[in-house]
Length: 163
Image (cartoon, rainbow, N blue to C red):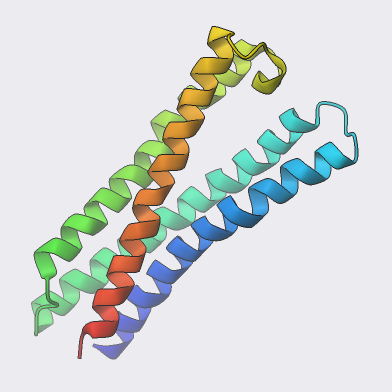
């Protein structure tokens, strides 16, 4: 049981911690560094670099979510059932749904919006519909990343409360 709980805590920590590192450190660093160095089409390049990092992170998220789910189900089958089992599974399902939607459908929509902008959306006029559409999708993506971040904190809390 300890190994299953440990695996779930590590997976939730990687998932939530990874989101914090990507959003608070990696993205700003990439965009700021390329801008400060005057790299030609730096925002486009920064977006491509961060987009690839996020794509790879989504794969890690799916693996972490699967590991947490397997841990919960096996522990429930072997007993005693983790409390609150149903709520944990529901939180995990919402986390995975947000990650899968963000990593598939939303990422594809963001890429289409970026291509429609013909370069960096930030280079367009603030009232340009293409820039507005890109900004809206980017905002949705950012909000969706908060779901697994908060969920991972809840899952870690419950795991630490278990005896």
